[in-house]
Image (cartoon, rainbow, N blue to C red; front, side):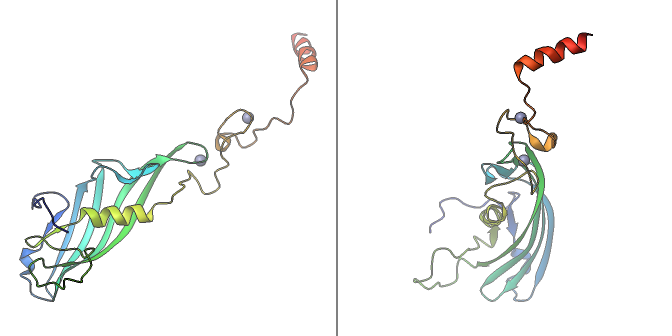
Length: 183
Ligand SMILES: [Zn+2]
Ligand SMILES: [Zn+2]
C-alpha cells in the first residue's frame, strides 16, 4: 500500500518514536488525552468527535520496528436498539500492534496489512479505530435487560415497568366510571 499523505508529527494520534533511537529494548511511555477523530465507532454507538480519548501506551523498540501496547479509554454515545433511549457509556480497549520500520527491506510476498512506521512516526488512528469498532456491540442496549417499547402505545417500558393494557375498559363502562367520579 502506498501512502500518499505524509504523517504530521504534531497530529494528536501520531506518535514519534525517534527518541527510542531504534535500539531494541528501549522503551517510552506515552500518556495523553487526544480529541476523538470523526466516525470513531458504528452508526448506533460511537465516541463523539472531539471528546477526550485517554491513551496509555508503551512504545518498545524491537528488531524490526516498534511495538505499541496499551489501552485507550473514551466515552460512548448512542442509541438503544430496543427502546431508542440514549446510551451513555464508556469503553476501554486494548491496543497492540507492531509497526515495522518502513525502510527495512521487506519481503515482496509480505501482506499489505503490516503496519509500517513512516519516518519513525506511528499513525495510531487505524489501530484505534479497529480496536473500538471490534469492541462495540452490534446491537447496543441501554441496559442488558432493556424491555424495549410497548407494542401497543410505544411507551418506553424501562421507565414504566408496570405498564400494561390488559385492563382495557369497555367504553360504556368508562362512561359510567366517569359519572361515578363526579358524584
Ligand atoms: Zn433500551
Ligand atoms: Zn403501552
